[in-house]
Image (tube, rainbow, N blue to C red):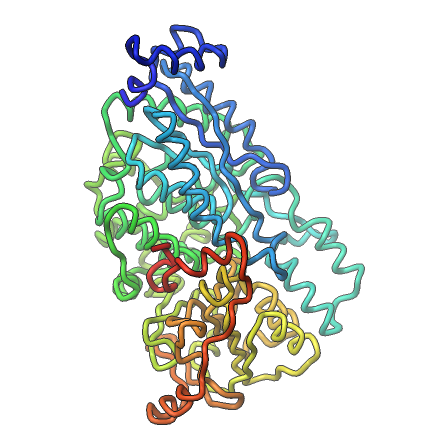
Length: 553
């Protein structure tokens, strides 16, 4: 066992004395030591209950003969961080989480790890750590929030909350209406109730084989979530005993499975940042081109919020992620021989699984669309690619040409939208918000929600080298690479240039010749860093492009 390095023999007596100081008995010290990485805090609604999940995990570990020892991981609430400098400190935590978990796990030589994440960067950060450490590990997330209900009975969620602000600025909703959303959009603990980034990644933990069935969909307040946590605590002991490690599970085939399920579910575009970053820690590379290949032959089977009016609790009742995967097996779209944390293959896991609601999970013979939920676009605006959640785009915006309305920050853009300066047909360009330029690649949920809330969702596109919340809907195209701060062509777009977007053809171009772009480049200079001290400044110096997963080098 790894933990033998800190507990066996006379030479390790000093180490053991400190475990005695913890109150551990000889019996506890001699058992496998299981690190329980708990992301509990009192500022993130998706994490406010994770102490209870951790208690259940620890109970499961003890029942199966291990000694659980908890240590923390940080987490940021993207919703609270949205729209101000705080959002620059969201994506950057992914690497802090991976690094700090690596440090704790290696310093204390745990034999196995149970990861308890829930919200946006916490899940990929811990997956990166699991891949990097490659000791037996299992994921048990905190689960999704329940959908809200407005006073008139309509169901609602966080994306509606942000769009309500846009409707208020458009004069179509009064303050009382906004307050109705405020009090009712987020009614419980858990990760926000649509197919946003947190729930996307928690579902993909199942698809890639690193979590037990139900991890992505069992609602946070239900007792079934506590039972799942106990099972995860018990299961880590089997993984330790059988020496099944993350890189035995997260193989190239498993990543293909994850991307296929991603496309079928209609997940957040942020998965196009996180899956490559996790693969990188496994010594693998995922290209955006491969994502388009998978999307081209994977039908989109789900339209959860913000793409539709169903929520995570509906997906759970319909059979969850495994029911979606079962549909995909009808056309042999998954590799079922991959190993999972159940100790069984995916084929064994899917035996007996049934789609219980064909409205929530469309049969593969009757999908929402024949291609996946995400598309990667390329062209002279984004030579290295950019991404769009095409399942949440209005049909009339799948092709669009319009004049560029250029802004060098999110704040400038949101002010113009609220002041009525953006009109039907425009293409809003927000740049210098990429991984380096932001720094931190802020989410643009405020401007996209403002566009939808002001009634422009079917007539205005938005492109950015920043990124989007999973709650974003509409023709919102992000991760433009290379980014503006690195001299990408998005930095050379002028006000009024015509931008052509064809999502079905996976293309995005500005009607400017190569010669003119080269001439403009002669007068372009890299901007001064927006943040010059602290972690964000160090991050900007080390981070790579969005098309590479914004990993640190």
